[in-house]
Image (tube, rainbow, N blue to C red; front, side, top):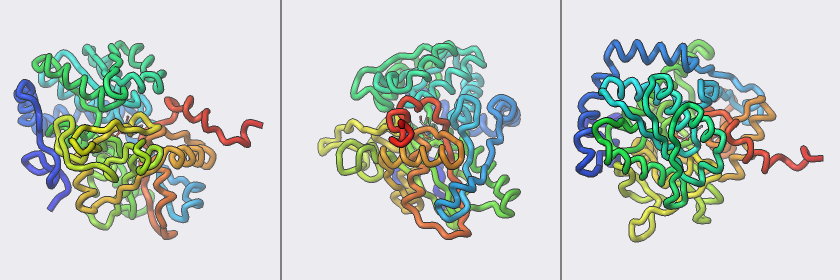
Length: 397
Ligand SMILES: Cc1ncc(COP(=O)(O)O)c(C=O)c1O
């Protein structure tokens, strides 16, 4: 039994491709070709070279000594924040733009929440001279302003989306609408392990460079390939999928995922899909969805734009249902505290999304000999305005 995708595009009961008729042809084309393309020697050569020379991989695996002392174990940080464009998202966009070129597409569309996937998509479109349109909810345009300016500077058209509460769900709806209108010439670079099959598997494979490197780096630094714990945050699930990919079927490794509790799972102002979601369909996949009794999707809330999503990738829904992973809801205030803690202990300002993974550490009990690998999925530059509002009081004297 494996926790990776099966030949029909499912993870246990979750996944599949629930799409409108108009998209059948291009989704089917992707299903038929993605594995051959990904494993071809020419793709591998170009992808590996760009990851090394353009993205700056391998990203360091850093033993955070002062953070380790606080939690009483050995904590390694996988530094995806040090990638070009500041997050893990570029691992996926580099791979998908190479696929799009091979499929003869001329136009790229993407959705974005925190703006990191939008920036990573605009970046590879500049690199490959492709037209780029990014859909972004109006709320996120306001709270991630710097990333909007970066996308525009890179030559992308950023389309603010005003439906719903103007966050990631609404941006994704709009991107899918665009794709339905341009199925032939356009490739949709989905930014997470969500969407119809094969996207969750495609994105997980492209992000799996993270766990491949962790294995090699741990072997060199600790003399063993397997950690005791892997910890990552989950919006749609791509940095988590990349972190666990090569370990997911190895039951010695405990997997801890942090979802956004928002103001608290009981307040209704939350994006904690595993805590509150029920089976449904969202953006082409069968998975847990936060919905009301009539099956209408509820508006999610999180301080972190990248985690503010009422669904979750089908891979992670299955990991949660089968209890392969422990999923913890980390609230806004807990994430903020953890971000300041890391900043003051290690001199690393994490993205608000990654701060949720750090917040989860406080909910776990470790032994001194435990090796914990936590993925810092992005850097906090985009979140400075939010952090400034929460600066500890003693600093203002
Ligand atoms: C830095 C960062 N981390 C995590 C996420 C959440 O996405 P995912 O769950 O796909 O890793 C985002 C999304 O925008 C992000 O920008």
